[in-house]
Length: 316
Image (cartoon, rainbow, N blue to C red; front, top):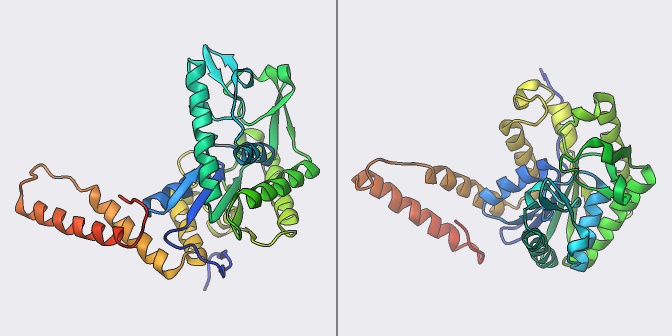
């Protein structure tokens, strides 16, 4: 007797190999998935502009990375004695203009270089809502806690959404390796501050626009991450205490589903062993001269060395 409806990710003919490079961009859920890929010691780069949610801003970021277009003083504003970019996450804010620009432009250099070698790109959209910064009449990615009166909030139209996704694909295909695989997901994190009905509308518009856009391209795929949490794990025990973000258990479940569909057998074994090693590295002792601990450390070092022999990139 079945007590839940399980959602599967279709098996991919092309698999992620242990030397592949994976670029991810979008919501905070994208960062959680990237963290697991990094723990598995795969080569990744996540969100060179910080966490971003809507397709318009994500395409704007991809375009800048594609063009390697640097930011200048006039691209920033000042608020609370800090220099900030409304295209970026608050983690880029500093009290000094040169420091903010250095952080932003350094991330653009790294992002451009990584994208040119990327085998896989994962794009995770979180919302169809966008804010316009009224003083500059500019659509922005982040409001930086600036008072609401300076912004106008609205839903992106279907045409705006599909145009942003379509152009994101074109720019990625142009800068990445030939045959790059582009995976689209919708974040399962509900934006409850928008309102429950509004959040559902926002997510529905994203799903519709993604399916319409990727139908025009090969090597573009939709991962049912949103559906897995909404329909497969539809229980609040799979959420954190805020009842909004998925729990660690839920994230791991989705990652396993993704791995089953997209990892080669060699990659699965590689990541599984690296997870075990990462767990073992957390082991602490009050007596580093204890013979048992020394033996444990020696065996762990041997396991790490065997893993290092499998790849050309630096791990651990």
